[in-house]
Image (cartoon, rainbow, N blue to C red; front, side):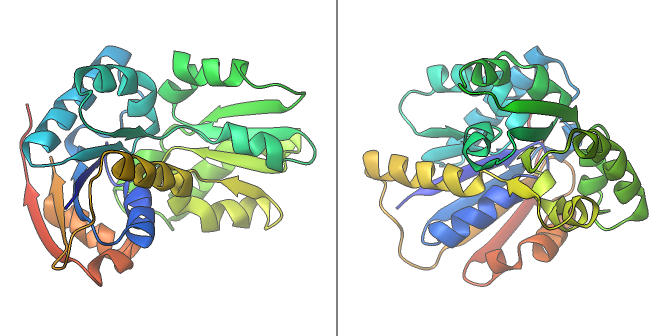
Length: 267
């Protein structure tokens, strides 16, 4: 029986949880939103690294046997350190899908919408440097998007106006592929397609992340559980608010799992 911990600075990791429930519904899940400290994208690298490690330790104490760092910023700043500190369990991170974007783009112009910290991280820039070919990448920090998503304003005129500003450099460059480099951003897919058109290819790595999780669960011989299956939602700010947003954003999570929820303080 496997209990899998998924954490993010807020609700963005629900995109990964939703894919996990689609691919591997027979596990128990603990979802931890550090909403009291969201967003991570503009915090110092040292703070993100230490906070991410603290949250992972907390999830392990709660019984998690595998962890998904469902935050691009936390992965970029902390994943190597977390794996070093916790070698006995699978640790799965997320990163912008620039490798698949290279193969999918036909005009070799790819936009990367991500947080400021992800774009400036050594991990991201090393990933860019490792790629071969003549693909041009246009990076853009999505400043201000995460707080609006966190407050549930996914369809608001305010977020559409801000998103249009951030997407303008991609339109000017004539990209045909856009990498969603933050787990929050897939929730904006309808708005992005409204602005950029249906012809744009959007790269969201949730599916690949969960496939890697499944491989690691098999490698570590963590078997799937028998019903009843549970999802425990924790938030460092407002667990009830988290669950209400989750019901709107990933309703499938509530169809086959019993739900528990709690607001927690993690120092």
